[in-house]
Length: 221
Image 1: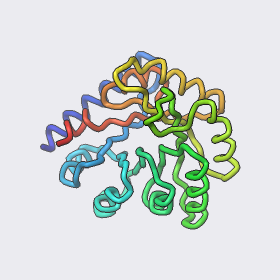
Image 2: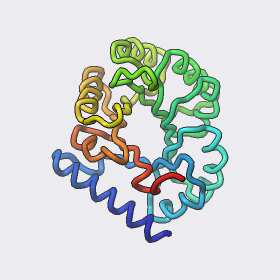
Image 3: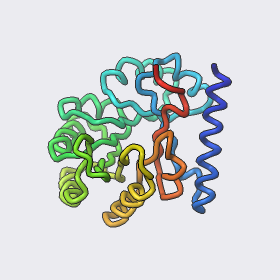
């Protein structure tokens, strides 16, 4: 199990390196987030043993159940919340996570700002943009992004970049390019984009954070 995890991790890192080289970027500027949602501590340990330290979860409760014990063993682990976050879970999310990717509405901005003030913790925040204008998906509509950025900055959130999930089964490059353009326009340096099927494309377009689950852990049961 350990060897297989090490092999998969090495392959993903090698593909990130090649994509970065193609774009004349440094691979060290791309953070690989191992998406460990639905996977238990037993499945996560081999990746930890292989040196992976940045992980992503999309449910606060699930993360609370498995990560505190793992973090006692591996205190340098960095945890990212990558799913949609309910405003009533803001306190728990701020206490547990080092970065929050799904900030997409004013009510969540307000809840996170209050939680940060209360706890003294200030996780990095990414604003999620609905680049494909899909009604079923989370994310701020492109037209409303300037207002959301302004509100988040006024609330004192540490906004470092933008995040997106492009529409499924279409070429993702135009959507990644749109996110990169929006980030440049608003002076934001970090781009959370690219998953197991398209992270190389994302890296060539400027991703600073790629969210890879299936390619690292295998298909979920």
